Length: 230
Image 1 (tube, rainbow, N blue to C red):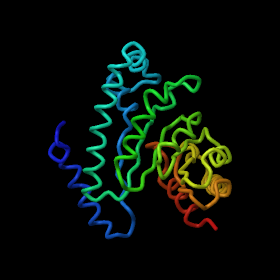
Image 2: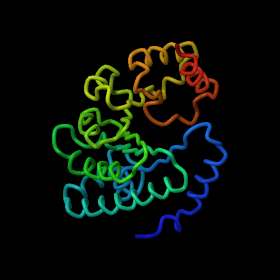
Image 3: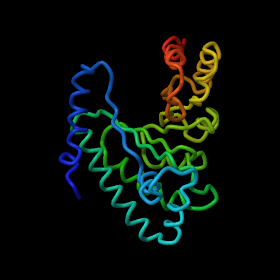
Image 4: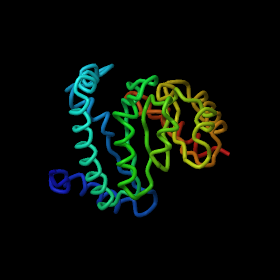
C-alpha cells in the first residue's frame, strides 16, 4: 500500500497549516469518501445517475467487488489516520451513493456496512457517518458505532429520532435547494427544522452539499438563523 503521507503529503501539510490558522477557535474536521461510493466512481469511470456498471460488477463478480472494497477500506483507514495525525480532530465519512443499494435486500449489508464499520472502529476521534439516501438503514448505521449520523431531507426529524434515539448525534438535514427561496422563508424553515430535531445531540447542517450558484446572502441567512436560534 502506498504511503499516504508521501503520495498525499500536500493534503497533510494543508491540514497542519489550517489547524494552526484556526488557533483552537473551532475544531478541524477531516473527511473521506466511503468505500461503496469510491467503488462506484472507480468502476463506472465517471459520474452517473444509477452507476449501473458498478452495480453490475458487484452482482456479476461479488468476490472481486469485496476484494476491491476491502482494499479501498484499508487505504481509507490509512488516509484518515494520516489526517488525524496531521491535526484533524474529527472526521466525516461520505457514502454519497448508499441510496442506490436496495432497501429490500441485503445489498447495503454486503457492499457498504462492513466497510463503514471497519473505518469507524479504526479511527479513534469523534466521527460522523453520512450515507445519503439510506433512510432504510438508519439502525445499521447506528450499529457501526459512529458518534454522529448525517441524514438527508428524505428523512423526517421525527423518524430519525425514533430510530436513532438520543444516544447518537444527528446531523442535517436542510434541503440545499431551499436556499434559493426568499430569505424570510429560509429563516422560518431553519427555525422549524431545529424545533423538530431539538437542540440536544443535534448538529445543524444541509442534507447534502451546497449548490454552487446559491446566493451568498441566502447561505449567510441560513447560518445566521442558526446562530440566532433561541
